[in-house]
Image 1 (cartoon, rainbow, N blue to C red):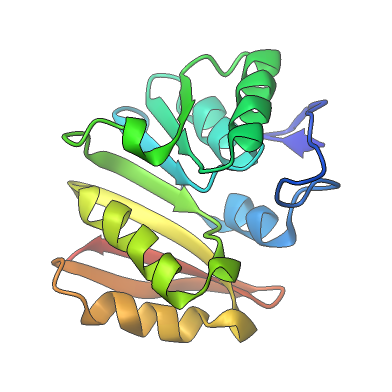
Image 2 (image 1 turned 30 degrees about the vertical axis):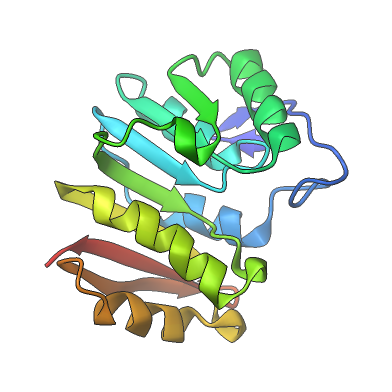
Length: 180
């Protein structure tokens, strides 16, 4: 596949999200999100086999990229893929392994909508409030899978964050979250 203009050979496997190709939502996010912070801590929520984390790492080589997932097979694949392309500024781990005091300059995610609203909300509740004061998050969500209701839900939370629609493409919306 091609990431950041580079033809890369990456490993995937059955049992992980989008094992045969770059997910279309992820492609929309990578093609439309503005450049991540060049430094600081960057986060990929639900990293899977690593395409978002690797892109963050290649775009921001002076930053530290965290890829979090609950699927250990995904984390192993992401580590293998990052090492294969020289994205050595990445750490792939389960959510509880990220130190609680880390604040993120950039968060990118194609969040796992399929886990259901309560689990998705808990996931976002855990990570979005950890944006740095000048941090920004970009989430890609299919229109028919609740992007508009997710935007409203984020705005209704008492986190001091504001969610807006940055763009729409190919049945997906890219939501942008910043400090209010």
